[in-house]
Image (spheres, rainbow, N blue to C red):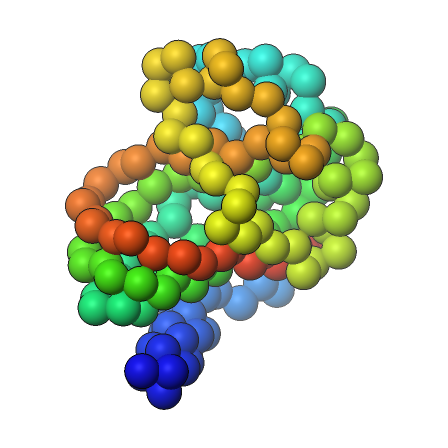
Amino acid sequence: MMKMIRVGILAFMIVGLFFSTAKAGWDPAEQDHAKAGVEFFRKNAPLLDRFFEKAYGYVVFPDVFKGGYFIVGGGHGNGYVYELNNLVGHSTITQINVGPQLGGQSFSEIIFFKDKEELDNFKKGNYELNAQVEGIVATTGAATNSDFSNGVAVFVLPKAGIMAEATVGGQKFSYQPY
């Protein structure tokens, strides 16, 4: 069983290498994609406005794709990092999940950082969110009772697909300044 998990994780990591894009500097089209990701959240989850106003910074992932089969799954997406509402860098998100699962889905995710210290931790490039930090599905009213937990607030907006899972996993992020 442990060998199957290792093989599955290795397979997802190899797939991630082929589907992730190399960055060779600033692409002006990225700024448009970053703005579209922020606007998607502002339009579809207006109760998050208070986080946009209070947070020192945030990272938005407009398109994260996730899939799983049998006991191993994973996901990947590209994102944009904002500090004091200015675009300052690029990020990637990689997820690994272990447990019963089947299907695929796409979603958008945003992580708000309460203060400079939390954003600086993220910008070190080895940031991780584990199973104890939950992304709240940002639907009408979801953000009214939410607040920062350990300096971060995570929100997810489903886009497409269906996935059944009972998994444990985590998310790992990279950061590259512009």
